Length: 368
Image 1 (cartoon, rainbow, N blue to C red):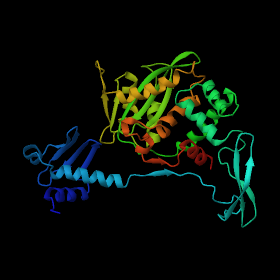
Image 2: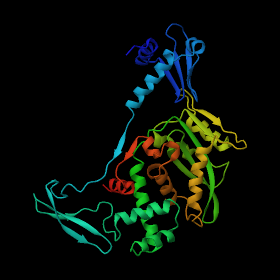
Image 3: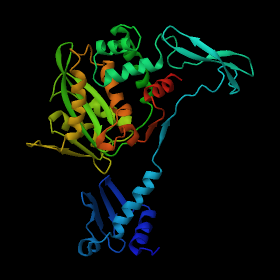
């Protein structure tokens, strides 16, 4: 294969320290190798553009663009990947031996559990991690979670379970939601998503105890990962610095670019929490709405999800309702999105959840 001189030069630039300055995922400054200046390398809809004469006049992929591309490839290879694996029933809880054999079925009221016998210590046991002492099976409980967070009411979920031969009250379904949402939240907040450096934030109103409140949400622009949330009493005057602090805590860094609608409280929170003395400064872009506007459709889609869920509820009972947390978990880890090639935001953020039933995988790992 014939070598590309510009690509070879770009590789040498990428391998040198302090030659490429990353402003954001789509904007880089690359040092000139012959002059005391820097060239702008910017991502556009047509591809990378560089301000150097080689690219501007010859319309070729210059060494500076090659350097940015190679630098990004290196950055992707070192990106942290987290895999949340299925929990297998493959070891004895007493002696940890994996020398097991099946030892019949334990019949519960509504479902069956496989029993095992350890060939080393002769202990007999069954494993039902995360669902111990539950009258319903893991499949039934997680089916209820899936139905509820895709838009069904508590009573409609209860009616579906009755068709499966499981008689429970709508209050029982609510207890499942509360228990497992809190369990998964404590587990997932310890995992850092690999989000981009361009975030969006917006608010929408909802009713809590019949009163109008506002749900503020921070979302990553690239992965669509819902990073953090905050419920407040007012729209434009609420102190939303906790939302910004929680976002930095979750992502482990501040964004290079923040897009908002320009409300005063967004500007104030950005100034106090994101715009530090460290360079490069975090840039605040005020998104101005126009007729038939498509520039904020990512946040509008998230708002639509919450609206669809809210239609089946009269109102939330409290500000820190597990329903809001459950919607966030469902959005990030369970629901696939057409806008990101039918992946979940967690997939895009380097968090892979194995198993056909991701609810069960999350609950069992959170229970360990």
